[in-house]
Amino acid sequence: MNEPIHLAAEAPASLEVSQSFEAFYDAESRTLFRRLWLVTGNRAEAEELMQDAFLKVWERWEQVGGMEDPVGYLYRTAMNLFRKRYRRAVLAIRRSLGFTPTRDDFADADDRQDVRRVLSTLPSRQRAALVLTEMLGFSPNEAGRALGVRASTVRSLSRQGRESFRKAMEVDDA
Amino acid sequence: MMPSISELLERESTTVDLEPGDFERLVRRRDRRRRNRRISAGVVGIAVFVAAIWIVTSGGVFDRSETSVVPGGDVTGPTVDPFSLGFNGLPPEDATPSEPLFGELVMRDSGIDPRFAVNVYADGRLIWFRQDHGDYPNTWIEQRLTPEGVNLLVSGAVPLGGQFEDPGGQLPAGAWEDLELRPYVPWRYAVLPSCNITRCLPAAAQGLVAGTERPFRGGRLKHGWFAGHFVDVVGTSSAVGFVFQVPIADARAIAEILSNAGFEEGEAGPVGMVWFSASNGVADGDEDLIQFVPVLPDGTIETLIMPGV
View 1 (cartoon, rainbow over the protein chains, first blue to last red):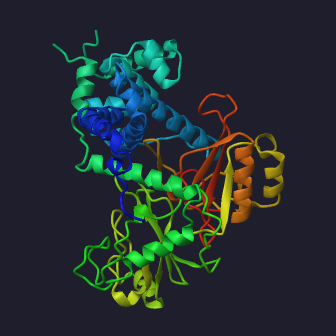
View 2 (tube, rainbow over the protein chains, first blue to last red; view 1 turned 90 degrees about the vertical axis):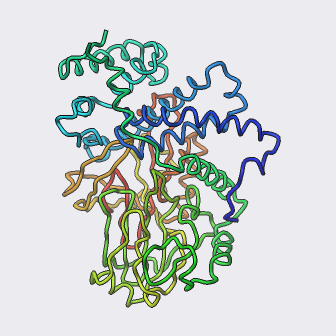
View 3 (cartoon, one colour; view 1 turned 30 degrees about the vertical axis):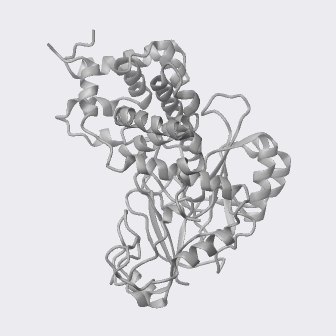
């Protein structure tokens, strides 16, 4: 009863698809994990979100694997999960205790670590907007869909994030 | 030329990496979800499930040469993976609640990370959970100590295992009445609505929770990390309010009422937490949430958003 259940044993017909998923995972997991870490500020949380996103992709791999942009689907799924969990957590905490989230990995950064210091000052939604727009090249519309907000909100969040960086560091964000 | 923001972020992100075995952890998580779905569908009752574990693992308990999930101590522990135990959501109807129903707490160690907690009871129960790479067991895990075992832990003569170890891993064989890992089955649940019950709970559910209010005692709050954030609430809580506390049969009835009323059951939370949200068309984060949390023998709950009851 405690033996692990292997996909190949349960669904031999989809073995080839399963192997493709594994290759997809190998190619994308590290990058997704790192970007989710930038968004969440916590390794365990980043891995958990990454796992949940890959599991959703895995369940639909026969469809997702044939998509033109499975990576985009993966990131939209991950950001959608992040958004739901984050908003739910904030809501529950606010309603129950009146506390707001206050600390994450970035908060412990040494002052000399400028990037971490700047990140520590940004709310998660601003980090997410920056990661989507600056690192992944999402348009405000695409990022808005992933984050469940309007494109104008994404533009505002990204602008605030860039402004924070500009104030703290001399960077070329052109 | 100064680096761009994207270059800075890219560079910063390369300072972290996945720990080895990440794909195996993914597969394990998928398998556990599948198994939980089967269990919650009623295919396998919890009594059968536990019995099967006992049959598989009862041999060679004291054979120190065997691979064990209990490191370091004088006795080899059970080979059961604590993350394979438990049930998805509320316990099946044939699950037997842990006894005695009430217990005197004699030691508690919550650690720094909230995904680790140990409770020792005067009656010998050791009820605990721990996280593992962002994963956590479906339920609290229960073992049984002898009076000597309780004394060894409470006196500090034997230290508790750390956050990533089994808490009783340092105890000698004589400290154990029952070393097996079993899912803790509560006989009561705390029901924590995020909304005014007269607005968000169906009338039938309101009838079941009426008169079961318990005030917060407050005080013992821990760091809670949730959605990537430490909720720094150590110390005395200023929170005021109440939760509902219902026996497990009523918890099941309320869950069924919520399901029939269109509430959506969320994915299982850590250590037996169950979530329902109203799928009433409001934006994510604005929906009503009803949380079920197992109540421990001393009447407390472990949750990231609420003190003991």
